[in-house]
Length: 110
Image (cartoon, rainbow, N blue to C red; front, side, top):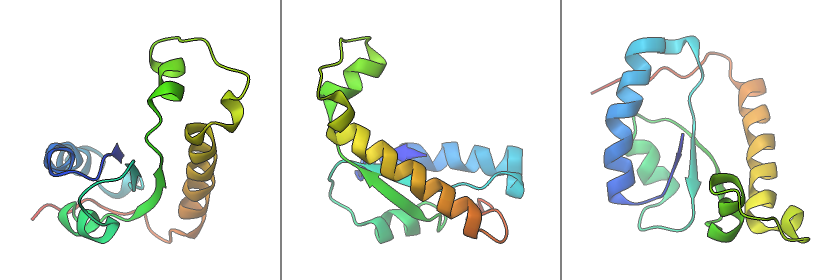
């Protein structure tokens, strides 16, 4: 799950992750990725969201994101944009997380 490290985003994520836990249980590994800077550390966010691991962070890059969300024209430097570098890092972190997970992480509500 992608979210910003803010109180609002963490609060909004809790019921969604709870629903994921109810519907898929441990069948699907779940992890967190933080977008941009915020008021909370990855550890604090993990603790607040059922102990799910934060496996990566990607930069807040609205200009590059608009290429995907709004169909804006990509600049020549798009492949080197912060968002694209972050997405590449996230892909590697996801592969590593899946490869090293013995058991899928189950969302346990408290």
